[in-house]
Amino acid sequence: MPVAVVTGASSGIGKAAAIRLAREGFSVSLSGRKEDALKETADECIKAGLKQDQVVLNVGDLTDFDAAKKLIENTLAKLNTIDTLINSAGILTNGEVNSTDIEVYDKQMDVNVRSVIYLTKLALPHIIKSKGNVVNVSSIAGPCPFPGVTYYSISKAALDQFTKCLALEMAPHGVRVNSVNPGVIVTDIHKRAGMGDKDYEAFLEKCKSTHALGRAGDVDEVSEAILFLATSRSSFTTGELLRVDGGRGIMFPR
Ligand SMILES: NC(=O)c1ccc[n+]([C@@H]2O[C@H](COP(=O)([O-])OP(=O)(O)OC[C@H]3O[C@@H](n4cnc5c(N)ncnc54)[C@H](OP(=O)(O)O)[C@@H]3O)[C@@H](O)[C@H]2O)c1
Image (cartoon, rainbow, N blue to C red; front, side, top):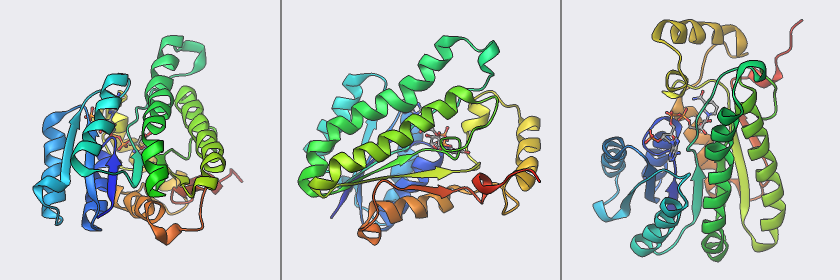
């Protein structure tokens, strides 16, 4: 049975990916900070067909390197191997460079880039053994610039270059490295970044015109793309930034 480590598994895209992979027969090692939410994801994975001992919970903040080490050690102790690492944990910070403290940049990069690189480094020796793969959850804000989320966009552009460079480094080992780059997906991330209920409603309404397909996306649409990249269905694909963005990234004013 293949084993997936999924970060950000307590919410949104990571949660949906964990459940989708569980349904596909992966054992899952789930990472998040909120224990109750992580337990809910575990229950859903069991409902999707896994046995209790095929689901491992890891509570911790991944900017704390000890938590990252424990995540990998605990996964290996309980599930023996790692076939795929899904790096979905991430945060969104808002604000123009002009008026946003540099500490916000530090925090943004710490969560979305530094901790991802560190965890991936820890997982790679095991992924090389299994000839597995890595799937990073980036954003359409990686390849495309948007004002007001510059630090976030920089973090995702860095993650995209990490995906491509690491794909080249890992190819000789038979390990593939790819990302999904979603457009706006309905999750908690925007409200966590400070958006109120009314503004969020207006934001989703605006998505009808900012996304070519006329709407925001759904976590299940992203998890299908993650499943594709995490399995041999994409056996000849590496270094790919797969847009799951309803055409947002190909829109230009006319
Ligand atoms: N939703 C979108 O519109 C969208 C679009 C493009 C890309 N993305 C990307 O998709 C990924 C998932 O976002 P989402 O929309 O699913 O957001 P979400 O619902 O807010 O989930 C974020 C997840 O990341 C975890 N997390 C955050 N900081 C962490 C830390 N320091 N250590 C460990 N875990 C941490 C959270 O854990 P806890 O909840 O347990 O704290 C949660 O499980 C992010 O990388 C985001 O940039 C999202």
